[in-house]
Amino acid sequence: MSLEYSKRLDYSKLDGLIPAVIQDAASRRVLMVGFMNDEAFRRTCDTGFVTFYSRSRNKLWMKGESSGHRLVVREISTDCDDDSLLIKVESLGPGVCHNGYESCFYRKLDGDVWIESEPRTYDPAAVYGSKS
Amino acid sequence: MSLEYSKRLDYSKLDGLIPAVIQDAASRRVLMVGFMNDEAFRRTCDTGFVTFYSRSRNKLWMKGESSGHRLVVREISTDCDDDSLLIKVESLGPGVCHNGYESCFYRKLDGDVWIESEPRTYDPAAVYGSKS
Image (cartoon, rainbow over all chains, first blue to last red; front, side, top):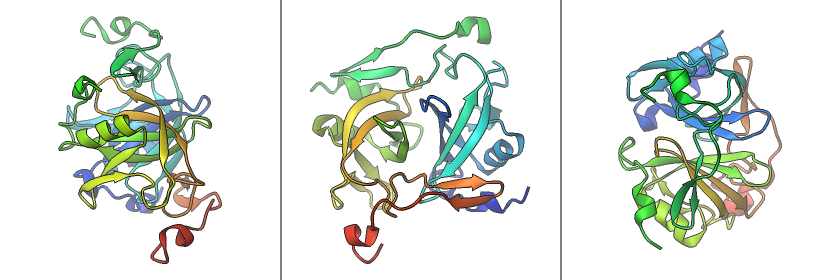
């Protein structure tokens, strides 16, 4: 595939990264936000599986590489300033969150208190090991 | 309102900012991504209208302050790492994008070409002046 499509994106505002919003293509639930550099974005396009750049580990990270809960790309959009991505996906697995939830956004503001408002969809210790 | 609720968020990873995904509460369409610092987040909570920190203008920016297309907060979530926000809104106006579209994500990747795949919902020149 030509690399021209990746040149449109503006990685300059966050030191080489852009945020990528991951949305379930069917339910439209927002599942998580990750960051991509140019290589992660091209890897995502080339493989069809969402691949981020891990800021904590300083390396490419295909979502689901350890859990098996990979994200199949269904549609990619960029915004007016070309500095954010929206990726609609099919999620292979019961949840994207390493804490065991369907979405990383499981904590809501209720008045002035953050509450966890939904049950886990899987046991993270069984997937990621006892560290989680 | 207590300020305790804002202390949970981790602004350290992006020099004092966190990304905020704005989603239409009714249609679940993702409308835009903006950035908030602690003051913008608290202003959002206190006023009930989405307020960002503008990276280009280096100041707080209530979305819709010039266009009137303000965003009424319906629900605020944070993610597992407390470094992203998801804000469900009611959008007051025909679109959030300064280019005249309902969503800033109006450009999709089709093969290896970015295409604009939907009509404008308003005339940006009439709202923002001829500069747009």
